[in-house]
Length: 73
Ligand SMILES: [Zn+2]
Image 1 (cartoon, rainbow, N blue to C red):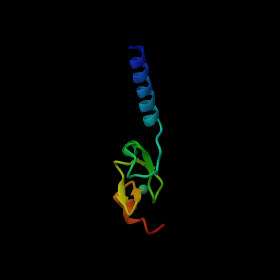
Image 2 (cartoon, protein in one colour):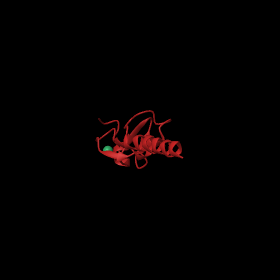
Image 3 (spheres, rainbow, N blue to C red):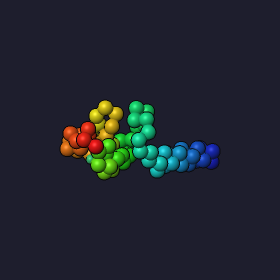
Image 4 (cartoon, rainbow, N blue to C red):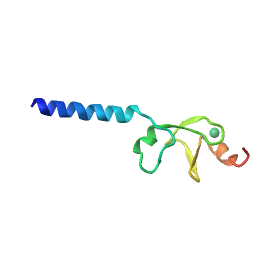
């Protein structure tokens, strides 16, 4: 029983560490937590949630305005 509680404690600790660490701009394909991460807009640098951001050719943009202006920088 004590071993079971220890095991559960370790799982919770790992789970907590995983979600406490937010890694912006790192392998979007493999990282599920990226949806929760804040990422900078490629045009203006404003940080937005990955799931709210617009993605185009591997880069993220905060709004359609920045997406349109991406080549002007
Ligand atoms: Zn922007």
